[in-house]
Length: 607
Image (cartoon, rainbow, N blue to C red):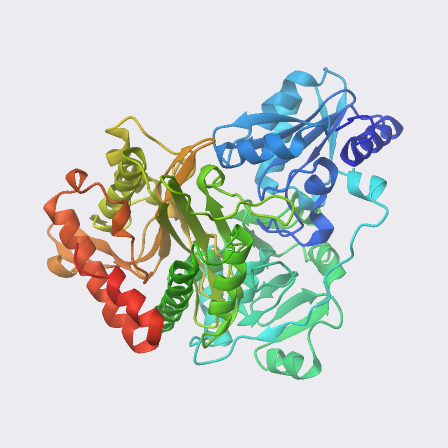
């Protein structure tokens, strides 16, 4: 590609022209929106539009002579391919939570110069770190520079999809009860007001859902909660009259989306405002008057929604069973069609999505399906496209591994599962990698731990079987999962993240367990189940050392035993696998028939 005429190169040059007009040396373009969402509406896909890098996480920095995307190891292969010829370089960082771009700016921008950023999409905590670091280097930070407004003439507007109610029985806890629980937490902080921007918190709190963001059933909104009422800021026309009336019965008044900042500015001097510095933007915080006392703490709703009630857990288990049944249907078709029909990674996405769509309660996918054959599996966030995808072929004497990471949104829960399947003749090295990853999944799945254990402390449990053989992986071991909400949910994270007190593991939390091994250019292995924290049954929950928890494995789908190197598994690990498969068979058999049932029976035979 000629970088002189690359569309992305030309867009970066327009950014540089804007920097010169505003007297700036650099601009920071985060992957963010006014709600600090992980998955963004098209309006805020600026980093992708400017650079061409399509990964879900990454930060773009543009100076007068350099452009760089900062991305972690999940995206390195993808980013190198997508950035080739664009004039934007890749800066490799170790983790998704890295702040290397901040230090990079401090060393690449000269003292006395200024860096611009759109404060309306910059997290408050991130802004504080950025400003402090730049000030130490003698660099000024301007938070009023929206590069996208300067250079993106056809920038999409706000999404207009309607908001709808998440109803009982799948929403067993009433809106009024959730608001009461949040107000009780506000009282503990001495707060008269609480401002919430994160869209999954708002969707959960008000028992509402939407479709403003791909794969996540949420809508763009802010909320200001007071002792006797709530102001919900949503774009006009998105909440119909009947729903507004239902919300009003619980003291919730719908107001225009753009009025959120003005509402914060109008708070009386006597107000005590609770905000979450990790979940509100610098731009919105700047509206609050100096006389208002501000208390910084995690959103109460973030903690509350992470702990699924037993009533919710009943629906989650049903959603997992329906999801498992869909996969049985798909995999039965896949194995019968392999070698007889032309199957590509795109075909897999199409057929698996269609199988899910036939299940009761299905609403949509929970993320882009990752169907990755051989070398494509070495990219953890790979996505096949019409222009670039692999054909799943069985050639004499050849073979490989097919990794499928997929999930669905159901009215009663959110699913996320990864399985790896042998295609043709696989090698001893394939089996070794697969079995060691499986050992990591089993090790953490079987772990008991004291209630309140900080979730990052559990990360090494899944890595230990891999470390023993000199293997590792660059992503986290597990992320929290919402309840018919975002597939990535906090506060818990089983990863190398530096822990804080809010990451304590509590009953009802749902988390993924997904260790992996990735060999660039060859293959990738990841085996993922969702699990829920429950009291340790054999310990009756508590001992003299306190209450202990364990994981209930929620995901229901066979783990392929054809890829296993048996000599690497202990007897107790095999026993766990056989017990799991017995449960999968018992739970899914009533939901499938014909070829799907036959496939289920075959794949759950004792190993």
